[in-house]
Length: 371
Image (cartoon, rainbow, N blue to C red):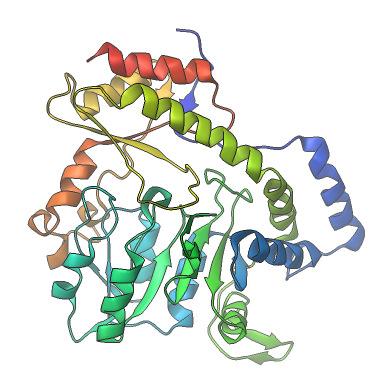
């Protein structure tokens, strides 16, 4: 078939290099490479405006942002979370000496199922860490109601949820904190990067101290912080990327619509649905391979790979199945029937701005060819 070689599930959007050169020249001229330089401050302000949030603190990556978010709220003990996510979600808990407690997901949204949370709460539970999976919002109202009842904190892993809104505005304004990833594969990226969205200046100030070794000034350290700062080069690239977001979202939307139009009526294929958000970001396109499809999930995965379509079984395996987690009582498959089933069925198809419609047609034909 005719296509670009090595078509991956997602690839970074790269603006023209010549548009980035003036930013590099400014960095060289002012000789500020990091430590909250001019571009860093400009990007924080621009993101607050674009995302509709009050305060944001930039990080060198999303994992350090998760680790710091937990530290900033002084979370200890046990945190209820989902096994259906990227490992950074739970790894951030282990790095803080916190015990993850896994609960099952909703089979339709693939987000943490609020109905499973209360049974997992113990006297040691201090917080809930849900994930807006594939950029589709969790049931934020139900989760907050439980958190309020049991006096728990809520930290959202919003790595997939850049720019997502519901009827009340940005989904990032829910919970105590929301954590973003700006990794190269994300809808908005800074090569590597991340951020914490926080509700007030006091919380942002604490987070800013923690990501800079705990320094308050040249001679004062108030906490055992880490080096999580974003560099000026990454911030500059983010400012350039932000200018292209309308185009990026439009192109992703077209690919999403094409897949939905051509895959929705194939027996044995279920499309990952939306949850009514008013603004999507089309970050991923998951499909679920049922028993009535002619090929198994893994057989279709290998068929796509054989044609240089590197789709991804995302998320498989579950976090709870990795060695550092499988010994937890909450990690048992009997506790996670829906997450286990979805993980055995899911394939995320390629979706990114530079993906051509010719390749999309080829992908659809490969899937239809087995039906």
